[in-house]
Length: 159
Image 1 (tube, rainbow, N blue to C red):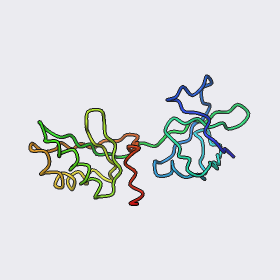
Image 2 (tube, rainbow, N blue to C red):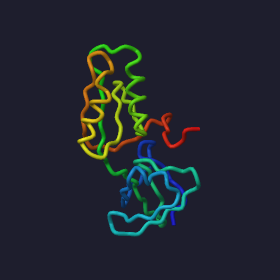
Image 3 (cartoon, rainbow, N blue to C red):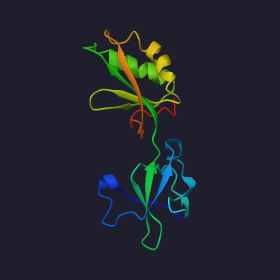
Image 4 (cartoon, rainbow, N blue to C red):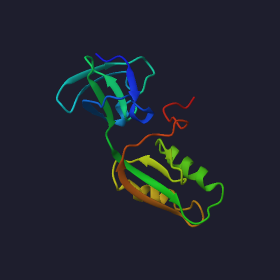
C-alpha cells in the first residue's frame, strides 16, 4: 500500500529512474484511495492523505527501492484563441462562456484557453457560443493532451 507521493519528475524527482508506471485518468487523480495496475502488471493500492491530489510525473515509492511513475492519460481538449486585437473584455467572456458549461480551463502563456471535451463535435457548439466574442472571433481547435486545470479555477465548488 502506497501512502505518500515521494516527489515529481518536474521537481527533480531524485536520481533513480522509475521502474514502472501507472496511467490514471484526470478525474481519478484527486482520489485519495485508488487501485491501479502498473505497465508491468503489478497491482498498486494507494491510500493517500485526504486532500492529496496526484500530478502527472509524480513518483511513488513502491517499496524495496521500486519507484512508480504516475502518468496522466491524455484526453480530448479544445483550445480557443482570440483573433486579431480583441478588447480587454474578450478573455473574460471566453472564460465565462466555457465556465457556464462547467468545464475546467487552462490558460496558456499565449492567452489561449484550453478545456476538456467529450467529442470533436462539441467544437461546433462552442464555436456558436463564442462567435460574438472578440471582434474578429475565436479560432477553435481540438487535440489530445494531458490536461492540467488552472489551479485558481476550481469548478468543483460554487461556495
